[in-house]
Amino acid sequence: MIKIILESWREGFEKVSLTKFQMEMLSKSLKESKSNVDLLLEGNKVIIEMENLDLAKLFLHEADKLGVNCKIFVD
Image 1: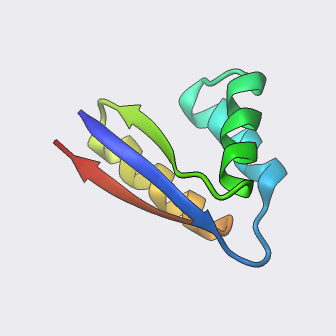
Image 2: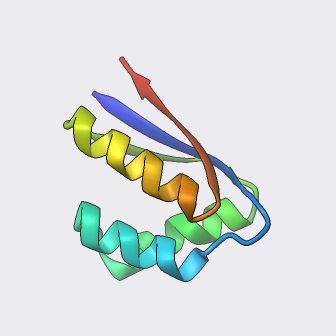
């Protein structure tokens, strides 16, 4: 299983874009996507599980551009 860990956010964080991005790329609901962003804004780490490493790498790259400090963990 591949885990993307959203650890924190940087100045200029595009929270609306991250919400939409999760919905489009990961097929997450608006409620779940917004909840992930809210948790991140509150200082919590958010873990998103995936099966596809290429998709995870793409998500990581795009999330970084949106102002998220994140990493991939493969177990």
